[in-house]
Length: 494
Image 1 (spheres, one colour):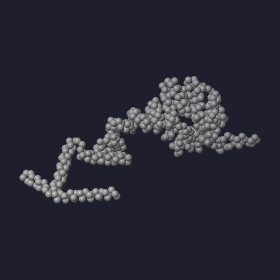
Image 2: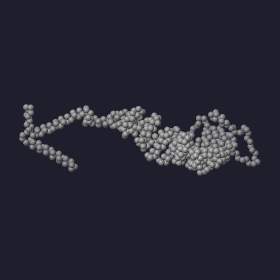
Image 3: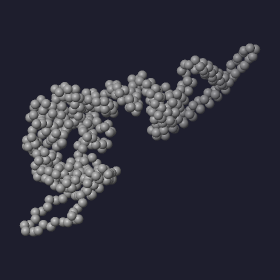
Image 4: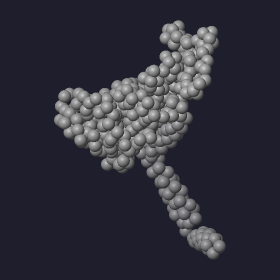
């Protein structure tokens, strides 16, 4: 309020001073006489003052006109001027407008529109870090791989955009299926940014697919140093890679190195079943049977598995069935009721021809968890005990449509594998196979095999002992159940 009042008073003071000055000039006698080219002009004091101000304005306009002429000359000559800066600002405005429209179109999935806007922005803006990168990504979205490749190659010349360019070229090679070149580009990208997690994962996957286990272990170590991988996961995956590295050495016949690598893999991850089996076989080749037994017992205590049992059997290949049965009791002592233990002991007792003991070892698995393996073992027990052929066929018919039981299944795509491998053959996942039951897939089979247990005579319980003195009733031949020929049914397709 005070400042506004002060400005009003100042304005009044200036107007008053000018008015007073004009009055003094009017009252002053004399003037200015100008003679030029035969003409004479006489100006009073006020007229002289006005003429002075007009002269000042004309001089100022003349200077501006001269400056404008010089600016136009410099503009035409290519030098920076106010006119050039005006046009530059106008071009920059249009360029950023096209750039923003291109980014929005790219985010919306409109690749062709994004490419057009990117080319327009590249025309107006002199910033390749932005425009060339947008051209590359928009060209990729529009399916123009040639233009995208050219744009990425242009970005290679700048230190600021070299990593982005290599990463873009790497992804293009992956799309084209050129994994060898993509792997080389991934290595170069990691040299520029060693802690880039996405590139680490891509390189690790490519190295695993190409069976470059040594390089994969180096990349895995880089992931651990970068903090993008928990230490327990690192130990497990490094054990997987060490196991495959040992397998490769074993294939080449260098058993000493294979033993060392396999034992190291088992030491890093004792619950890795293939590593334990390989380490035990390596120790057995070294005639260290106690060491092999200790490795397998530790792995069996972590998780009973048929591969561990097979490796345990290979420690003493020449033993008799009775000796093997006795030795295996030390392996399964800590998990006597585990399903794998019971199935294993049933198989060993069948090999030793102790069928009643095999039945007791099997227990109620055929009812609580009837898998193909359990039902096949039960059929062998029935045959070993001299049961009717129809009973044996009944168990085998049930086994045809029973679940397969635990298998090596991929946790990503659910594909079932006959043996463990670090890479899923179906989806390419690394370290995704786990020993578990695959998901059930319901639905009738093409051959109608699910009806076989219904048309084959079902398993018969053992007949109860007859009381003494009672007559045995023999059924007529017409009342005897018909025995279906299972082989003939299968040959006819059901």
